[in-house]
Length: 353
Length: 228
Image (cartoon, rainbow over all chains, first blue to last red; front, side, top):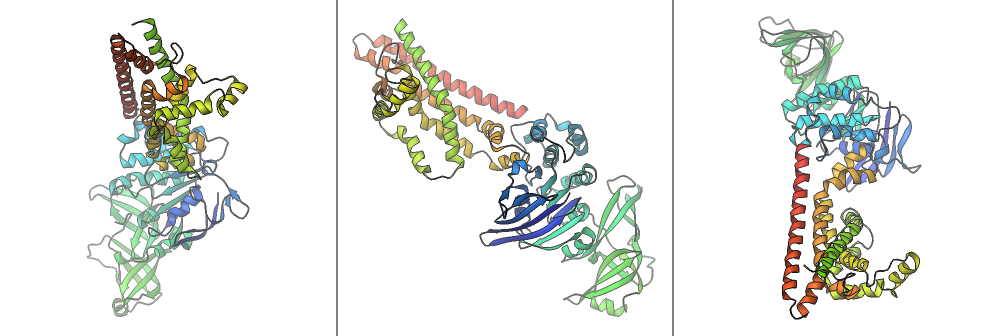
């Protein structure tokens, strides 16, 4: 699947001028509120008609203003998970789930097997319930299932976790990961949370004031996205759980990491996001130190920032790690590219509050 | 009660039911137009719909006689082409009742359509539902309480309609003599007081039953939503 978007839309003083191509997997539309993410998703979903432009899935035009093509929303086969789940209040969970199936004719798209979707999202016990009686997290899971059962070619998710608290978010994230990895439906995911993007995205599209400022794989783009803090992402895998100290041990290209116990099985892949503020640099391997994670590496580059600080890019056995130090520290330790150092990681985040 | 009185009660029920059921689809369509669409002449349509509420019923009845009478432009056409005659028939009484109850019907349904969350309709669209199907499966069920309330109002209005009916289709026993017309007739003749009183009680009973019925229906819908 490929989604091509190139649109120009004006609404009052705001102008949306966006162009990007989404690859398979989960593409995150990332940006502040008001940057045009939701408008863009609504254009793709057919809820807004753009002034000018083209939207196509696999080369098939959904919108092409030059040729006068506007496919109405109900014939696009694009699932949409809204921030406010929008479950139909007069229908049971089961009938909400099956609503789109009446119309999902023809092949293609995701599998529309009720049993598989129920299992994927863990909503079997809710089927006969009424939307009013569900928690926010349950509602969103049902909304995701409802969108999937319409056999979509693409699923849009507009900040599906924004209205939920931290615990509920943690409850849903694994399901979205499974959806990305198992259901085989491409997802366009709107978010302004670095943690969500770090954890979920394959590709990131950064938006600012109605335009796309960067597009690329999550490893390359996320540090740009997290401009205020900066950071790096490590692909890792859970090696074992240390129940005594309630820790999980992760294995990554850069080395072993110990983090607070994760709620995932041994062998599960995880993404660790390490903010550059949480990384200290030492010339010798520190021995008596409270931090659990010390990674060996080599300085790849040093970029001074405006405020007497510098961003140090470290190459740890092929993986990239970022550290933000004061210019004074860089000077005192005589850091130069190529120099072997040790990175002391104060904390690894999987979420950013 | 005398056979004449029973006839009037049966006729009133028939006329009110026919008027309500026949005007319901039109009422829903116009309520939807007024609630959801912007078009040229919208306020004119709104005014026209509400006119019977403001005009003296006798004036409405007379206008119906002029347009739907046998020699009227619409009445003449319908009689010639389809053999449908309104003047001095019970069908005419039903038409008069439908027109008089229409503003109440439209008003109640329009308010309930306006209360339906359009974001739900958009969500149904993204699931592949055609707009007509969205209307039938989302909008209509969600505004059902309003439709029932409007229909009960229109029915009650029809049961009590007097001015427009008597002007348009007169007061013919067995054909157009409804409950209110008969009560009026009885109050005009000596010794009719007892019969008028009986019919008044019948009238009160029917109105209360209709109201009770609507309450029960609304409760059942509410209950179904809770447990479904």
